[in-house]
Image (cartoon, rainbow, N blue to C red; front, side, top):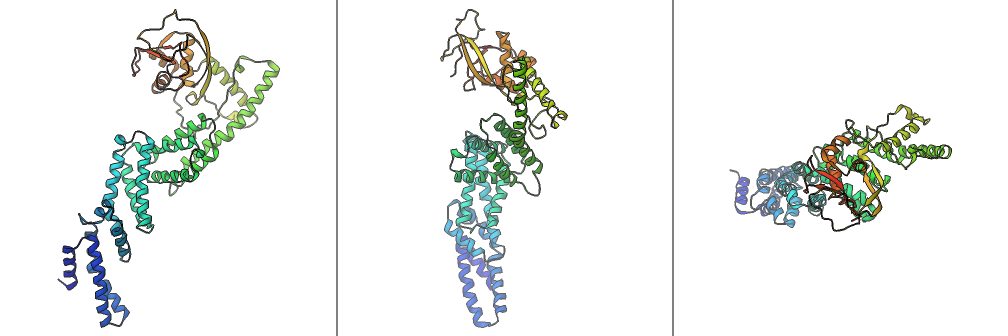
Length: 469
């Protein structure tokens, strides 16, 4: 065993990780002073320094940084930030030293990441809590990078690799990220300080960048974008366009080009194509009303969104039964649309009720009551006749359901399913939103027998005592 090897073994036996390197630093200075007395040639001095570094540092680096009770993982757990900073600065002068140090931190990063990600189902009550937990964890490592590791890009890369690993362990992560962005955009930038809004979104973009498979996120984001563009009262083209630009930055090597193109196409349909089409339609309707009077198809106003099927999340196989008054209005619009001098005659229009909303004038014949209590019975015919008219905003699916009560006091779930041809899950959601989940529509429908689950034989009837609750 050489002299330097014996020194190395002695230090390994006597010192913890950081103390080992500090004593090695002192030993190197001591040995260099001796060498300078013996040699006057810089190349010789450098040669011996490299030998000392190899024997005392490089050969033992991995062992030192991974020491169980005093290595970098232990230092991170015990917040020994001064020691970590000193070790980083020391190893920065050693070839490959920083990489060995950061690789030694991977087990800790992975451990705390797995704890957060796998605990999300139990600890986080909604998508905001989930995403906030991830952002807090990322900020913790960002602070380490800034304050201890001199913004070293290698540390950024190391943390990114580990995030990419543990984000993949929970399938809810892409869903929660998409809904977090959705809520921010629905509330609008004015709700937040612009500085913090941008910072939050940029950090979320980092999470999206770390996703190994973005397909689930892409699907959820596109559905949410669809809902914002079609149902929000004042969607912001500027904010949506900025967000798409940020999303584009999460892709590399040309991936995501088609997806980003579809999102931009959705914006174009909403803010450009639809405005032009509706302007032509409204002009034609005004002319027809003046010349021919108000025909049946113009008994109510319609606001049509013409969208391009390749850009939007559309299931072409879905079939629906729309009430005749709705089809009449649609056919009138289709005729005017095809008569347009532009290229519209070549385009085939398809009605998409799953995206629409309707404002109804509903008539009720019972006294309003805030304290609703129904037994498992069908409605009685001798209800007190107190005529009231309310304006309700419902989805097109809900309109199709409510239309059946113009001719029926009660109807079963199975009959609704067969007659409306609404997909079963969508029909269940539409009914529940008019029973228990909705805001203004809560208690509009009553189900018998009672219970949260909906079965095919369950009966539904209108609550004549309904009022806005």
